[in-house]
Image (cartoon, rainbow over the protein chains, first blue to last red):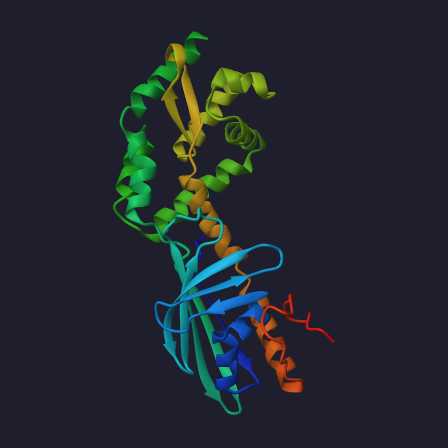
Length: 143
Length: 145
């Protein structure tokens, strides 16, 4: 099978890094190409959000701001409960190439497995499992 | 049950092969229509005994017991004591969330997003967009004429 933990893409953009940087790090930019609306407090630890007209919202936490080369944030893993602590890390790297920019995006952390989640999930199931299964077998045999 | 010991040791590590195995068990469990119907019944109706499920679903109790063993092994259901020593099964969501992590990675459409970014940048070159954020209400390609 193969569990994808990391997604990486590189694209060549025919625009200088400063312009790409603005598209990635301003509310106006993010709210145009990515979400339908966006807010951003552009500093490490700052909050950012995007909303889509179909109702989804993404809350991000800005992690790295190194204009105009590195912009990174973390966000929630879509589909997990809202209070789940797991987040993926998204990092954009901009590199000037000629007149344009080589833009790389890496999103990682899809395969995280924090200890506490699994203790919570399976601990209660270990004690008494064998005896309960035994009861099940007895019950079904008797039926 | 032999598989149980592994589940416990997994709680102390966070390695890829283990999460992969866990996700795989979920997908194997979900690949069978009978097991999907059992899980759907537990999801919509709450904890139930094999007898309850045999009444609700077009499956014999023996067949249910066989599927329950697989579902329990995948950690998707847990057995608990019900009335009169009857084992009741309860759905557990933790393995589903692992499968959702897998699906989230597949569903993350960076190709689409980066195409949209390119379009956005190209658009701005030809005709600077002065519209303030929030006024547009649309993504790439939905700028007012």
